[in-house]
Length: 230
Image 1: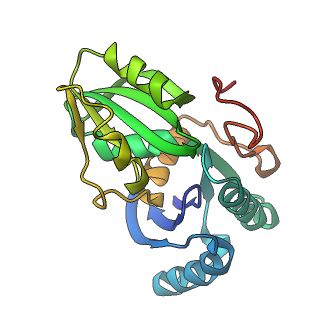
Image 2 (image 1 turned 90 degrees about the vertical axis):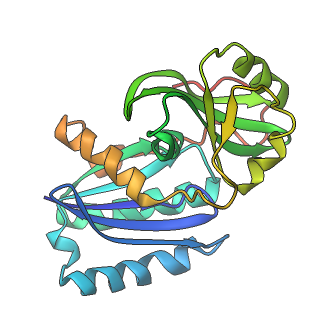
């Protein structure tokens, strides 16, 4: 079974190709606002290196959000454009759940963070034990900086915070002794994590028709900070 996973939910663009659950090819690059210029040429290069064509791919997966409005639209529309002509199914996964996989080795709570601007953050918290996710404590919620600190103050387990370089400003603010951080610059959101989550969804037969795949922005850009409605 062949899978293409794509992530354009942040300023990084990433593609991953899997076969039978094994990662065969990965690309990740800081694209800023040029995802639409980078994605298809890089995909073409990766496919040629494996002697694949688009029609060989069985499933397509994308990060649905939260994240960049423009980036999410590009990612979702790209997956649809690739899947529809070949009548293939698609999978959407949470950007923050994909972030959380970067801390799956941690025993405790993994807090995935994404800057939503204006001192607000998209937040998900997952409990991990010996490399296995035990439960989701908080999912894709939009919190102010103060609300985030209040929430983490209620967590008694060790906490590992995972995020891009722009959340480093929180390190001095979130000063609890049980909070640890993945070093700035050592974590990059990649389609590898998106693909791993998608493989689980495919195995459970939780797949979609392409037209049913929609971005989950998390907020309207003009609204106040509030809880995300699922």
